[in-house]
Length: 470
Image 1 (cartoon, one colour):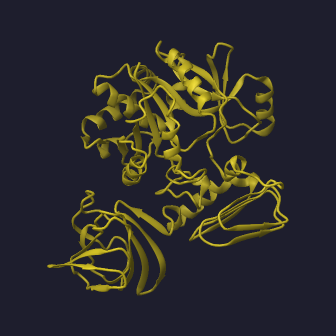
Image 2 (cartoon, helix red, strand yellow):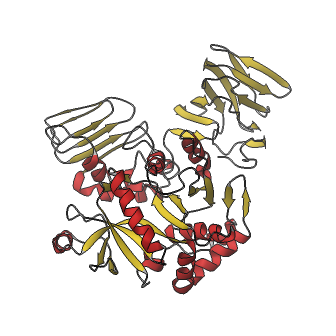
Image 3 (cartoon, one colour):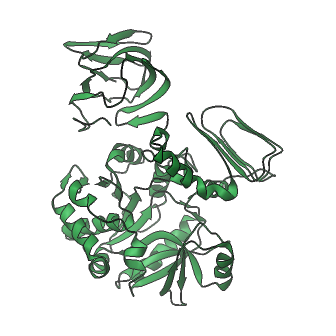
């Protein structure tokens, strides 16, 4: 029977700030290996009886180009459902099931996988999926319960009987309760991974969350579907209440079943989790990047852009990025979300983006900024082209430091080579193209009385961003 992967790539990963940002979250980062977590999720589909080559990925509209680029590097051509905003997992999974229904594939089994998990034993995962398929064929809504290794307080739990019938979903417990759960042998960690048919899910939604189903159906009917990208109608979708798969259906249905999973699973939901799965030295320290520790124990130090040092720390997390540093005790790493929430209330830009900002054509890194000027390093991918645009408040100086740039400036089109430069006056139409086979790097100096990213008027854009500033 057809089993299609549905990859949920809409999370924000706020507990992994400052590496994970709301507009560039953990699933798009190389956090635990040389590949991004999204790429690792797709790679582990090899060996499973699923359609690896054509997964359905549900992500935010603003992240579509990163998702496509990362999967194309693996030779994968995904279909996308582009959410205008996150509404938790129940609407996302419902959109996937509705898409299958519209295509006449209601009996299709859908393997729901978050894009930000680590699973070490792929053979054990394959065996669990096969067991789940036999149950899902008969209409069951299957969840994968991770066999607990320790009394973790950062996970939800599932209690099941000897036949795998779900008896209870439990929120994140206190330590004493978690210890009792693990000792009983009746509880599993809630993995957030599922397998069921599209029809079974939609019938269960009609019974337990008909309002979400109705809104999702209307949003799908009024949405756009082209070039392998489904865009639900934004106004209707934004009216959908946020709810999880567990709350909306799994806690209420009699069809819920658990398949045990013992495969080295982690949701990498905090820096403590990242430390737990990292390689440790003899003192329990994990060091990533250009970092040095002296007299430290059970400490995680991650450096993204410069030498980071720690002396005499025990049980701590230290994470450095180009624009922020986090220091937190390991046992308080869940509280990083509180820090992010506090920064959001203060409207700190560091919540959404790091210093390096990714665009469909490449990225820019803000090197320096003071009143009246700003310096950026632009990296334009081979064959990529920026939008034809102008600015009302700033002029720009461009210096090519590597590669070849094809420049449009009003009615002129010319090329710049390494060490050559040009000037773009205020209100001059302009664009940059990389005609070469290697990345193009340009140092851009902006000068003006206002340097905000919203001072962009787009006239044409390969990536469909006319009228937008992203």
